[in-house]
Length: 277
Image 1 (cartoon, one colour):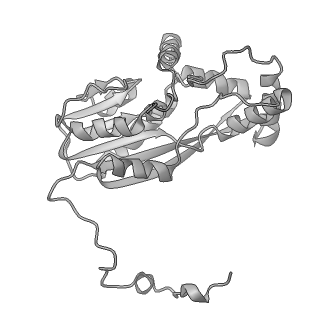
Image 2 (spheres, one colour):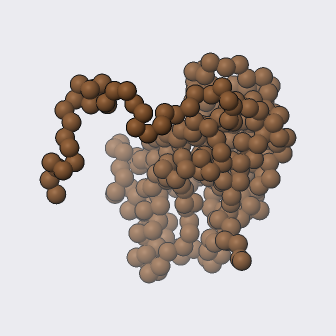
Image 3 (cartoon, rainbow, N blue to C red):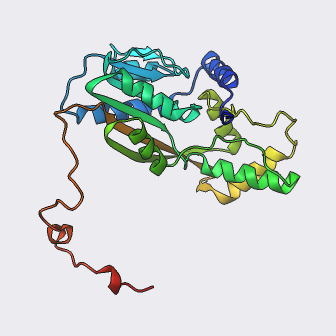
């Protein structure tokens, strides 16, 4: 049986990240994610003494967890089984060729009742850039090349937590809109984040000279943020799960509720057979 092709060219990804670090990485989204993680952890009634963070850029995460063990986001994570009570996968899971495998490795590294917290870019990220490039390239060449990483939707990621055997799995999303002077300023920021094109199936041919100016014009027309600037969406999807433990809260069996939801909400209930077509 043949294996599916890799999504990510890991060598190209490493080069992109090394260039970003060498030139001074742009970390505002990582800083935002670390601040959000700190807030989420503050709401958990638990003290973590053995944290680990899977991170490309460890600086923002050391600010919130100075004693955490920092782990590179290799395909095989340097995590010991049952060694940690908290594992954070910090803004790199979207590049994983085997995201389920990454989650399983994090799950195995947790002690019973240990917490996993993951954050990654989701499917709405860079929707504007994706559309502008696709429209421009389709018009100029009649085809499309992989230029922006395809990212998972929240409904799919919640299912991955269950496949990785996490208890009490939760997935939620946070969107942020960032404005730029032009599409070229956005692309420069993506390179400074180490988020340039590292797709395994990216085109190796020379890019048509007119492509990026055409895409930039379409972007500015369709996604203006006012004041001569453009809008770019970044969607962060947060994944939360626990290593199973006998003392954890268990979900109720379907049909076991003692009170109807409509009664609790003091709302009218409409039977399905009364709904129109």
